[in-house]
Image (cartoon, rainbow over all chains, first blue to last red):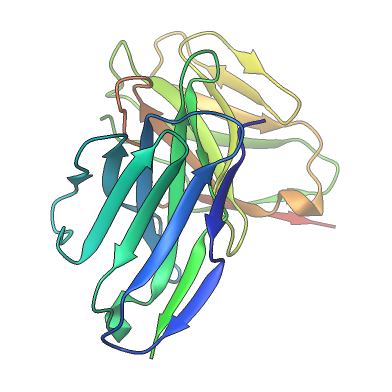
Length: 116
Length: 111
């Protein structure tokens, strides 16, 4: 149980284009999902907290107009990197909070974004 | 959220117990201790969490000191596949508690 998937697992795009990453909780409902970014040899950095049916809360320094988050259902959150540039190349990871007795966050496998 | 301190790296012989320490001296009463690990180029994997009692599951044991200022994750019989970065995090669940990742401990299990 408590499986989180991400799609795509990797993507290569041209500078200036937008990329959408999906995060799904497969066997549980998640009212809260989180998005992280990880650069090589660094730890995970929290970007934003996403609650179903409401606007995401972004961490300080994260541009909300560049990283659009939508959490339209209890099992799906999407992150859209708009007008991507090479410096946006990174490993993007989502997590979903399983409430009730599970009581913890479970992570997706990550999406490797490369912007040329 | 309280901050944690972990050694940067540790080595462990295959088949032996791996004991990973974590200091969280500023932990508050409603914060849990969580352990995750990340194998290269994968998403973090949940290992175990606890509030004040020791916990054990099929992956590991978590020993929390009585004053809750530190804890130890124990992998009873480490294998080469346990080589990963291990993160100790304190957070409040079910209140939208964020997981703030530090640098973790890079555990190398050697044959």
